[in-house]
Image 1 (cartoon, rainbow over the protein chains, first blue to last red):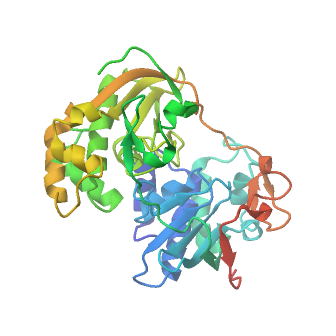
Image 2 (cartoon, one colour):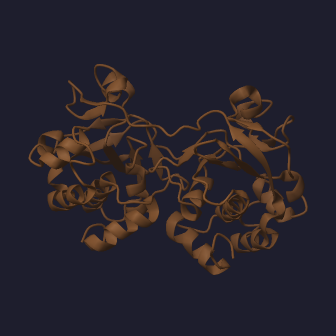
Image 3 (cartoon, rainbow over the protein chains, first blue to last red):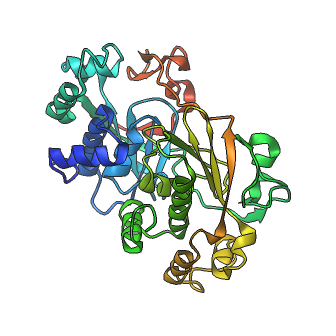
Length: 191
Length: 191
């Protein structure tokens, strides 16, 4: 059992949430599994993930931590790693894909390093190899999180004088979007 | 039915994913529902959400878009709004909580503006009011997304000379973490 699931359940849950069985999420399931085996029981664990690609979904499927509940933070370091940590003491465990270990699993290594095309390495073959490798390709180390460890609280809210929408008062007199940081052009209003 | 679910199923799915029935996610479900009613059929819709609090989870539960698959992007504008858009044309629909309309629903308005304590407005009362209000408190407008519309591709990968982990080559000679942007202190290695 990985994260309390059979292999079939694991792949099904990945497909349901992520849309397809991404190999990175299968590795991610083993990473979350390692974390919860190593964390002390009853720890309230938050997690920092070091990439926005794929891996956040493994955490959201296989742990209680999500982006929206604030227990998962995403750092854009583009590394295949995560650190679960006690939300109070900030002590925890970092788990990463260990390239040295992955060398013993050539398909996984080549896929991870972008050295093989999907045509030459079908997803089913790769996923089967990942399932076989399990946590053989992972390493972990105890860490203390010293940045981004605190949960963020929502601050005071005010109404923007320009767009009349609510926003965080800490942004200033008008909202960030009205300050020019918006991302869209509006067509005819339809309220 | 909202997002293809009965009220009970909707609340159950929120609790399972998010950990508890956050009022913001219930509103979020109605927002996603509005989006998919207005989007043309067969559009491949990506989405931008304008806050990292709560609302991303509604999108991840009630649409195929997740952080990890890249179809959901989170902008930290701290506004309660989202824009679903055609991933090819970038045309779409923005949906937001309309404060003017919410005034007709005092509990929702007061909760949203942080003007009432949880003790004075129990979550069950608030959620029932949100269910009754449905999309009465929402507005929407057609938009064209002009920033952050493109899906990001993973670039070339290399091995960091310092930590020996893989990272995106675009970060430079060593990885961002080794450049000083890390977030943890490591205790004894355990590989």
